[in-house]
Image: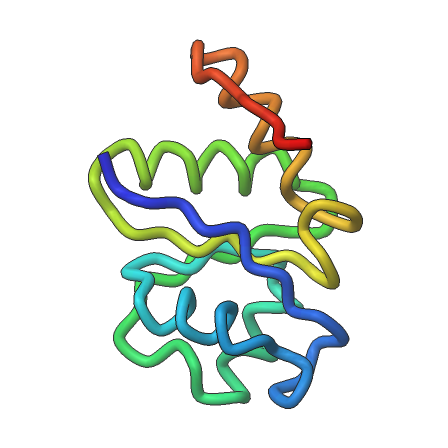
Amino acid sequence: MGELYLVGMGPGDLPGLTLAAKEALEGAEVVIGYSTYIKLLEEMGLLPGKEVVRKGMTEELDRAEEALEQALSGKRVALVSGGDPGIYGMAAPVLELMEERGFRRVDGG
């Protein structure tokens, strides 16, 4: 099994990316996201040599499915979201798909 990172882009510019987000993007083999966010990352020079998957505005479940499948196949995947992925973005669809597949979720206190 590979790795799946949910990467928040913050306000959508290079100074707004956290170091952890930048490192996750640099370490990823595959980067999946809404086409506008992918374009911003390309303009920042963060995606050379990466397999890039672009999806449209209303394709959140498709992005989550693709990211999970790629990670299950052994790849390091960054699923890009605007802002904080737990609040504004991709965490909910990914967690939904993981539960459907029998993954267990343990929340902290």
